[in-house]
Image 1 (cartoon, rainbow, N blue to C red):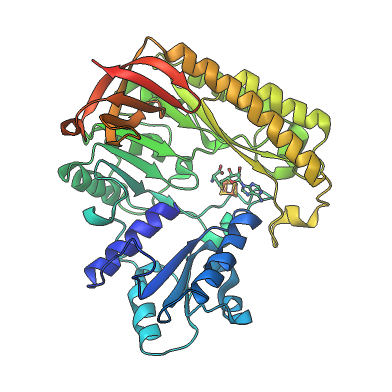
Image 2 (spheres, rainbow, N blue to C red):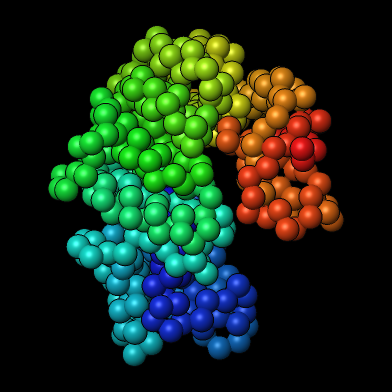
Length: 428
Ligand code: SAH
Ligand code: SF4
């Protein structure tokens, strides 16, 4: 989400005539995009702002955007951190005004306002992270209020983009040579546009399942989507994947814990059993859908037995990748009021144990892929000369020998070797 926000802000600035530079030294203005999902991420902002303040050369204008900007607002101007303006998560469309104000000498410019109706969600080609892969936001915000999570506070309530706009973006990207799009949102399954659905002619048990079929009908080569909320994930989404080759065989389904007590305290709205049923359903697909997840260790009250449940669930689900987090209390969330009673040392041990299990499961899964053919989008040059790298439809990173003329093509690669986190293969 943050990469996508940055691309759109850079697009606006380029359109306003600013030159975007990769080098911090040569920049007159530095915009820091921030994350507040854990305390560590938030601390990074203060470190970076301090470094900028004490860097050599003429003083730069420093702006802060993203979740920390939204949550901390005016307090970012305190302690003389060298921050000139603050722009909230929905105010990014007015970043140009913030810069003009700061250049004109206005101190402490802040905009935490709402998004404008005509906000442009489509980044320009030169500011996208890849010429071949693009993010397409379909819903912003979150209404779930999981007890540990700050996102509903930093990103506000769920708001879906009209389907006609999503389709227009996909078609535009396709025309520009994009091969793979990622439909993104905190909970894509909660997609519920209020106006102009445009989805009437597509079947589906939810608006999201209908949107998937509508996006598939654009003919874009590959479609991925993230993040899915387990409670709202229905088998019709798997059906849509089964019916459409261009809907990729990868589902990211964050579970957060393998204990019913912890899930209840997290207010996730699913149990271990109900989650496993969804996994069984996805697994029964003939498409060989790969699975990934997010998991938190050390949530308040998590016992050794609860943690064991998490380890068992990992074995059951066989995730191909997982983002593991140590619980971090976020001020203002209900969980921050609970006693953070799992000691740091214990959190660390559980994290490392789970990481070990995950690594083994991933290796086993990668080993099963050796000898098989994967369809890989050649996204960029690899680490070694003569090598290209990209993702498979199942979201694995694959390296292979090929000339740069293949960049941007989808190629068949026979997997010959599996290393930690990466596959190697030969183009067929
Ligand atoms: N909307 C997505 C992702 C939200 S944030 C979802 O519901 O899954 C990304 C991940 O950060 C979460 O899935 C969770 O695993 C982690 N996370 C969120 N708040 C956290 C906290 N307070 N401490 C540790 N990890 C957290
Ligand atoms: Fe946070 Fe839960 Fe919303 Fe995901 S679903 S963003 S974890 S509140």
